[in-house]
Image (cartoon, rainbow, N blue to C red; front, side, top):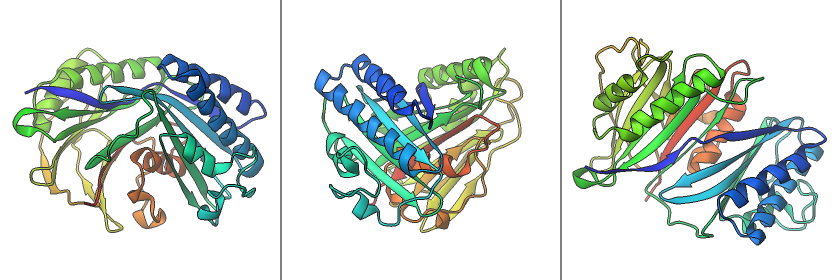
Length: 345
């Protein structure tokens, strides 16, 4: 059995909306773009994209932030840019995406041009509540074929810290389980560098595990975290041979399956991975096309409902993660979320 990392949480550079946002975002985005090997032309396009996002936030949003990060997926690297605001939202997204519209554009390139510049992009707006825009630029300039199960996530540290104790990772499986995915969501206890260190250890143990079953993988992560402050950890196996999710979790990780505007919870057990691991129990649940698996830490409120987010769960997983975090993050805590979408055939 061989495995490969599909995607992992990386360092996310969060920039709050203030007078210096555009310059800071342009500088940080250009640095990330060149660090992953984008050409000067493509790096300039990333800079143009985030400048437009920043200017829109300052001109049109009540408050907001940009999240910039390096993304790595199946051997590729790129830069992902997210704009998140808390209102007023866009009443007519289609109109905002048309070139020449000034309602949400300001540099003359507009939202539609951001979509043309990026290799992948999306927008989701809740009138009166907030908008998330996502743009992704790959170093090879290719738009990959849509995957049957797409994954993405986002983390944000507690106010005053640079490092987040929440993390996530996704692995693919070969051999008899080819096409299956293993997912991990981890919330290192506490905040700041020590909690982030726990997250790094958890990702390393998850990466090195050669087991398939979520309970066995969880035990490997438990071994990897011994001697640390510990964490809440959830492991899910998305098996497309029978279209089911196999889930086990310990600690305060919320796991939900969203389908047809309904949500069903998957239960985690009390305990601390790395310190007090109960006997893992794996729950198997159907995962038909059109279903989303959402796992998040207690840095997000778990009281949200799918009906509060019309149209969201058919979008890119990073966009889903961004909007759920945007609307439900608990300001006094680290926040982390991982989303897997089974695209309709």
